Image 1 (cartoon, rainbow, N blue to C red):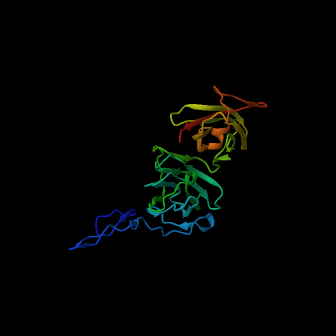
Image 2: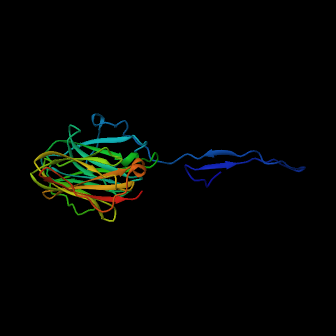
Image 3: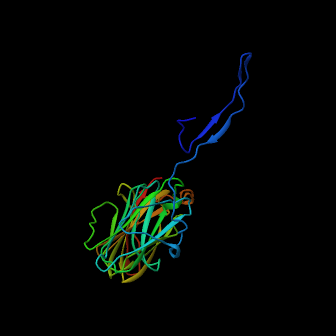
Length: 288
């Protein structure tokens, strides 16, 4: 039998055909053709400690095979080629990437576009050493048969950052942004590492760019944490953006079903102040 589609379920029935007459058809039997997905040769690499070494300038293909699967890879730059660019393409689901120093915990770059948009991190001022890439599915996204494509590049010249989704880290003191709990039912902690003292803008916005919550904080150098009450927001996907001294960081935020059923309707925007600090928060709202 030919012409069947890979990874597809079919049913068949059997009937005898004789000169004296035909029998009734048998009960349906179901079978599934073999899927023709890619093969992941990089497992097991689910932790920074088990990150697999990859060759720079070469495409590698791998799978996010389950909702809990994450992939770690490592590579090194050199004295003559310090500039770094990471690209994640051919995405079968909503995957994101983070770039860490060799300890696997100090984040120096992140790219989190929505859907299957390609991801790019450009890090033009990194020290010479080993770096670790984390590839993961947003909110448990995965595809057990289709691979993504990852490439790490190094260069003596700065990589351009005009591409959509590119995030460039200008200094060794990166400004990572953490949201927790995420998903949330309305109460959210925004934690970021401010490189300098001064005003920091935190924006929450939807896919259309409409700001749904905003505050301004007069931040001090170092770790900052701000608790937000977002129970007035509809359930769905949002973006939280931090702007500080020319740097911008964006994280996805998911308002869960629990928030949808338990929140109270609030009309208009809110501003709040704590002590002498004022905060500006902008969030983009995405309906799932």
